[in-house]
Image (cartoon, rainbow, N blue to C red):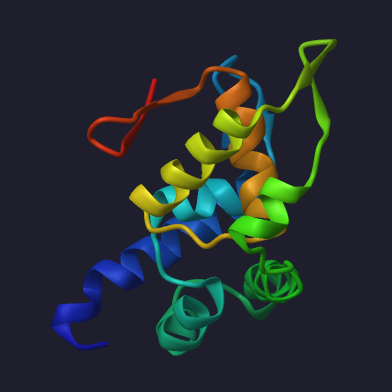
Length: 151
């Protein structure tokens, strides 16, 4: 891999390791890496990262280990793209810490702002995970600066 893309390879290795071992959440528990975690690490589509780093990854990981990455890529390809209209038209609630929380239009706008500020795609899984994190107060959005930050 060319020197300018070493950072992509390093991120790809980190992704594979996390897919194999899991990721530690805020409470210290281990869980599976999800697509929002992925985009917090790197804002390149999983398919592009896999395609651009596969040959180099084979030097460090077995085919069986890389199959986990490939499965992750396939799942991300099936993640339905959303529009702002899709999101704004839906009225729903989300269960957060055993409490049903009504999702307001402001909540939706803040989550969309967060995704845009962090150059994450607007897809069903990414949006749903970001919404859950937002409602759980894991990040905040500064409306004046149109900026989002993790807490």
